[in-house]
Image 1 (cartoon, rainbow, N blue to C red):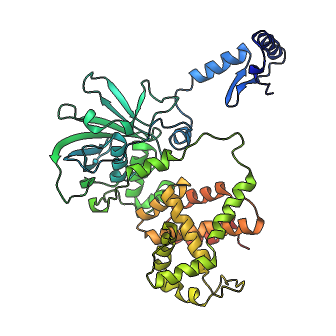
Image 2: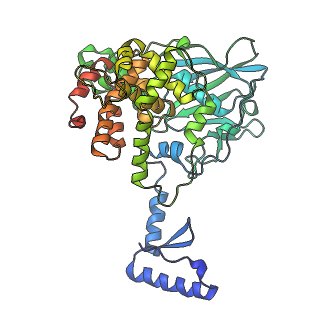
Image 3: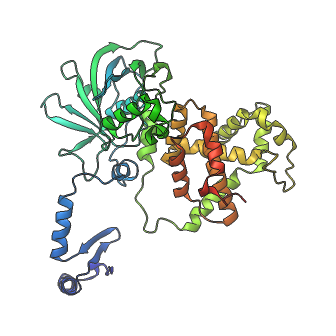
Length: 468
């Protein structure tokens, strides 16, 4: 497909002649031609036969392909049109909701209280946290508009909307504009593949209680189903397998979710509510229009090496001295983050930090020594990935380990065991980090028992040869 000169360089008559010639060329060769009026504005000139074929294909595509929904949620350029406004901490009332997952018995439900000035985006994040979902699929609220009675879709708009009606941005629609004692019910759907449908029922509007932190989880029953388990029917099959000890050990779905999954367990005190504004920034805040070339591979490689060089021995020793004396004045937030990691390893790494020779090119023996510099570097990288959900598989793996009663610290270490040999490969081979392989490993081991992952990684064929 050839790209022709900008048509704006031609006069009206010349442009018309040029178009006629291009149409004849398409008719003769049956090959599409790409036209540009100016950078970023393009059109494809194709034959009517090709147009009719494409029109028919598009009309038959009613649902997004696998992975397409995630694309719209995380990477869709030009989204969204407006940022959410800062949440006003001065509110006088709270809305009490009961969230019930439809189609399952015994029922899976949660009771929560949220500020009255919450938006639907804020409520979405609260539902994700209180239910136990991971928030890496699309969602939508469907609710009657109070004045007209018309059913509205509220969630994450997309250029090619997944609904017959326009989807309103959840971060621009407030709860009081829809919910009332008379108009008290909405349906919340999460993951359009598994199609998890929730009934969202406004139970009460109460005065705010001073000294109480909102949002708050009051009560709930039953564990949240695992992500991507196949919806209601898939989860029911999983429960049947879990209840049959004869087949549980051989069932792939049971191995995937982990043998310690307890469908009856839920503790309201364990719920942690994330900042909905930060969640929005992670999902949409850094989106920009792509440049023509998107950057060279060498620049990307330099960024990887730069990140590793920044965490050098001199900096870590300087921070270690400050950490020991509790002198954190004047250091950056990034350095404070590193200090927190160091203090978490204080007993384990004390001798290595004290005895390592900064002036030499000392190489730590992996068989007898722990390299504190590499360990802190890996820890920092992994924690940043989890916090930013980039890649999303690191965040998913981390949460899967927590659900299997693995500590947060050990979950970070397990991710580091996959990341470290790959970083060795980057440094040794001077090549780009293999992000696809990294994500594949995180997906592969997400369903394994935490205590078995270390031994399995030692035998992992995808990592053979990665360590020098």
